Image 1 (tube, rainbow, N blue to C red):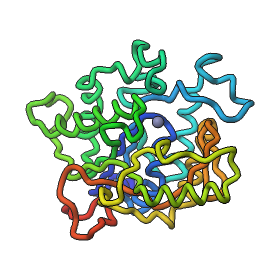
Image 2 (image 1 turned 180 degrees about the horizontal axis):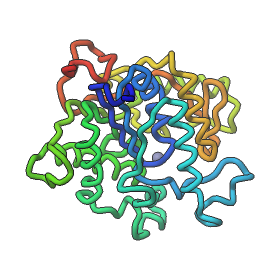
Image 3 (image 1 turned 90 degrees about the vertical axis):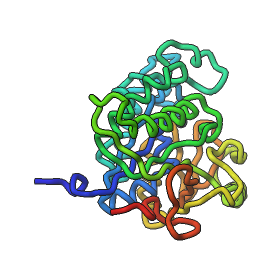
Image 4 (image 1 turned 90 degrees about the horizontal axis):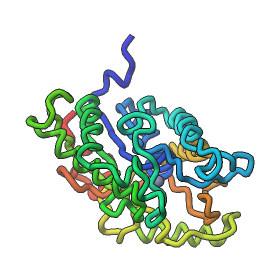
Length: 295
Ligand SMILES: [Zn+2]
């Protein structure tokens, strides 16, 4: 028996830093395309070992105690992927190849084996193997600042953009598969007007100790930089359930959520992108990441 995904000609590859980033940033997008039969592949670069833990009963998992949070988050990611209908999720270079580097400026930035210290070309080689295997038309990752300056997010950007180039180069490591040119590359975005409205709503209604600032939210830019708007209203529930599956990292409450800092943010089913490589489709803004891609 051949699965639906194996038959689909359309492929979407998302490159993320830690388990939970994919559901927060692209949950509705992934659920929509998975439901449409697109081959969706998520590559996560670290296990998120350095994260804090929200539920007190799981506090023993943290790096300064048992240091088993990474293994626990593999399970959370698997649950989130099931909620979104995504069957293909992988860790860059295999489970545990790169360790969480922590926030910028902390001692974990210098730990050997952390993702921030990884050689970009070597890490990109692992991703090239995936690109040449699954042959996606669309790649989604972060901007050059990683959306908000986290070292692992910056590194994920560098590795993804390098792999985009190398995968298409016939001279680069032919043993990893035939060259593949990804048609379109997007960076995750959040229009400033949307997040300002959303945070005002959080301030008025959300049940959290505080409210996030726009600077806490990844990928915020002036509205005019956003090229592509994905209406995921039909998948809002799936996105919320996927985010809630990351229970050590995320608290979901209705149309709001908070990370371990307790600062509320809006849980948005509409997701936003900036096309940075490839040709845009005919609509402004685009409403489909595959717009203009030959079927
Ligand atoms: Zn992250």
